Length: 197
Image 1 (cartoon, rainbow, N blue to C red):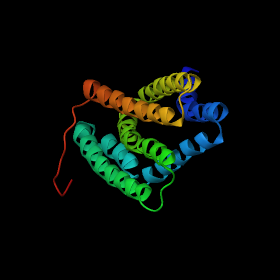
Image 2: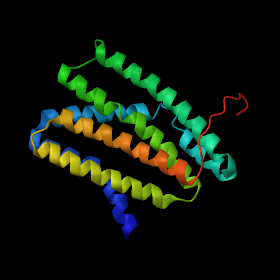
Image 3: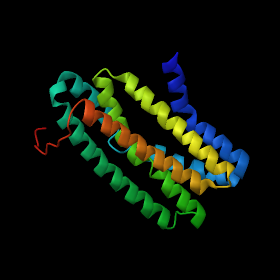
C-alpha cells in the first residue's frame, strides 16, 4: 500500500501543480508552463533514450562493473542533453521564439529534461540492482517536495516563472539524491573512454 501511495505521489505532482497554476494564475501562465514541458518531453526522447534499458541489462549481467557503466552512461547522456538544450536555446532565441516571458519559462521548464534524463539512468541502475523501493521512495519524496513548494509559491502570488524554477530545482535535487544514494550505498562512479566499451 505504501509503495502504491508513493508511486501516485511521484506521478501526480506535476499534474496537480499544473491544475493549481491554471486555477490560480489563468490559462496564459499555464500554457507557458505546458509549452516548456512539451519541449522537455520532446527533447528527452533524443538524449540517447535507449541508454536506460541498456544500462539495466548491462548492470544486471555485470553488477561489479556497475559504477563504470553508470558513470560512462551518465557522461554520454549529459553531453547529448547539453547539446540538445543548446539547440533549444538557439530555436527559442531565433525566429521561432515567443514573447520574452514565454521564452524564459520554456527555457527553465525545458531544462528539466537534463536532470530528469540523468535521474532516469540512476533509476535504471537501482532497478538492475533490485532496489525498486528506493526509486519509488525518492520519487515520492521529490513529488511531495515539489507540491509543497509549488503550492506555497503559487498561493503566495508567484507566477509560472516561480513554478518553473521550483520544478527545475526539484529535478536537480532528485538527481543529487539518486547519485548520493548510489555512491554511498552501492558503488563509486568512474568513466571508461575505451572504444570497445
